[in-house]
Image (tube, rainbow, N blue to C red):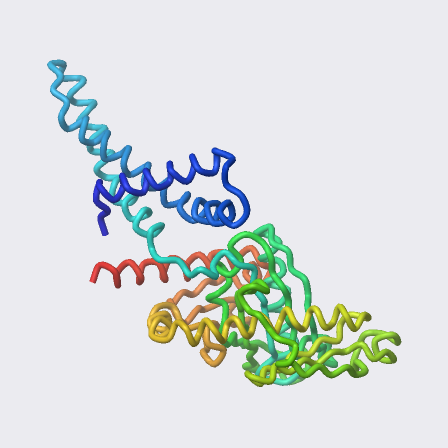
Length: 356
């Protein structure tokens, strides 16, 4: 998809206008926030557009050069050939930068992991996934805060929910939603047989209170005594909170904090994210079907990846990518290659759809 010179000029002019408005010091309140948001969204596009403009201009000058010196003409021809070879890739980067973006890409995310089929082994695998995302987040400079957890008797998680904050969290994690399958010999297996277990991952963009307004009359809040691991205080204090959103039927519980107020705040955080995702699904409609045809819908019922311990491999079934680096992926840093491959595949298919 080639971008015209006129469109490049429009991008440059709009970016210069935003720069001037922000530098003027005359913007305040909502106007400043809106201009700052527009500037942040346009800046990566404007930078790549400027590179393309400069390359096109330089190539045109070199091709028009009429120098009597044969050596200078040869140098100009060599430089023009280099620019001709590099320009298509720069134009492709620009086309990718100009693709319509999911407005939620810049948001933090709620990460929910639940043990699926496989009993205790599934719970242990859920804990492995949680540690993988924790370590990957650390590599990205993000912050992970556990919101709630339901531990299993063997040390894994039946369910764990965490808040992940940082730059571009949802954009990088959104394709992690789905069923993750593990094939390995469980620690409880005496016969050495390989078992297949699963855990589901959901990554939800975290909204602000402005995005999702929840009225008190729509909530049913129950306070009860926490159960499970957590020490004497957790088990003897009425601090656990269960919130039911009556219009949608969504139910959220939190019992990890000693404070009832902190548990309520965390439960509201999770509820707001789930309601926001529900609103996004309803609003996107046909667009959601298009996403499903790309690298997967992110639906929790869809098997997306297999972690095979005997062979030391991880396979992402949506893009048919297999990496024989299972330990490095579970340690976090190796996950970046899978995430980047999923993003690149999504961008390539969206570009192809726009060209069609």
